Length: 144
Image 1 (cartoon, one colour):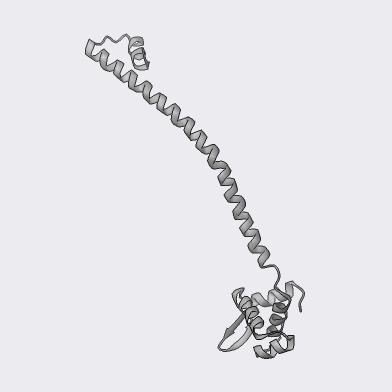
Image 2: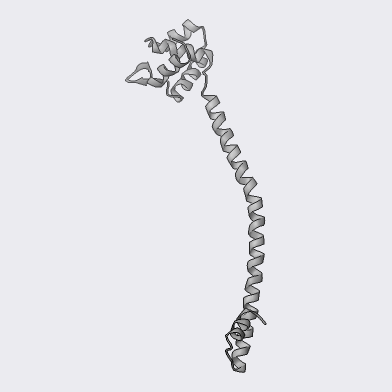
């Protein structure tokens, strides 16, 4: 007998034949559901065992991306630093800066792109200037 039948027997409840058949059917359904729960719990544990290493790998990769990002922003190329220093010191003419550093215009433009991208230099109203972030970079890296 199953749990439902055992309950009725313990309570000394008498049932008609049709009710006993229903009770036995309920017991069988209950056992089937218990079996499914057991299978689902085992499957859950298996899936968790697969997911947990993936979660750790995602976290590791996210940390790696953060570390790479922070390393990319540690130091500028030497000529980019010199351009930033020239702008911070008030030089406005890009071509003169390039000439004083003896670098080609295309390289200088590329380095300016990096400085703009990192928000170290601005060009508002055609006035070239170092941003607070750019000046902080110069000070923090002992370039002034």
